[in-house]
Image 1: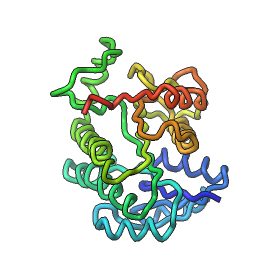
Image 2: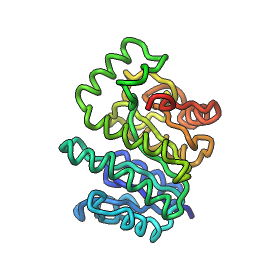
Image 3: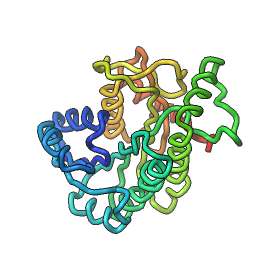
Length: 249
């Protein structure tokens, strides 16, 4: 039986992911902030662990990861639109601590949930497949949640540029705006347009498929609502080595 450790296990994507992994015979451990979240996660089949990412050192986090010996670590945590200081502390600095802790614990497989259009907008050109509608979505997103976007950029950049040292088998999943619809089982993945939202359940299924597909290791790719079955979409990203972050950080 495989084991997964989810950072940010109380989030909506993570809850869908937990359900799917448990159904696939995974043992799922979830790092959460509040004891009050324990009953709901246990009802999903998770084994919750109350631990503050902000207050934990790399050594603390390494000890937790070693204790549960997961086959895969998933980062799905975030400050959830809190203060700029907390956003930086969780979405950037907390993520980096977990990268280091995962490597120190000897776990190789790592999947991180990021977001579409996370890139260095000041120093790098826009993706060549963007159309005017995509540029407009990008402008609105960075205007509304720029602090979050900068924190995600810093974390994703660190994951990629420091991997010669960490040697993680990482995949960066970059979903578009999230909705609460039931999963459709279909998406558009890779070099996509930004206008369509995606259900959290479908994002969770994309993560499951990435865990199972080693061809996605070392890639960062965008995913939004679309018409391609998720298994096919992920397989195409992996086989064509589509990376929407490369050259943009």
